[in-house]
Image (cartoon, rainbow, N blue to C red; front, top):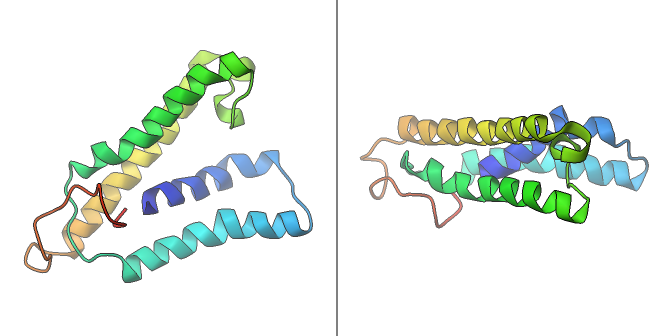
Length: 142
């Protein structure tokens, strides 16, 4: 979950914030949702998250949702004439660029996921973990 929230914050900061300029309460909500929540969640995970090593194989499981959502978005978009993000809008960008953009976001997911696993494996030795590395399917270590 930490990786998902951090990717959301990074995607908004690097790409999406240029497409929307909220004012008033919308600006406040935008700042909280896209900046405070990702940063706060990451700090909370580092401070209060489970103190155990994660398995390298976890990354593949974590990638299933964003990969599936990307496929769903690119298949559904032409049928309904709407895309949730401008960087995957096939009607504006064409398939090659939209697929490249989606692959880029998935690449960020993969790199951050690998970094989280590497962090836990370096930070928590096998003896400090309560069990062997877990796949990360249950619980909130992600």
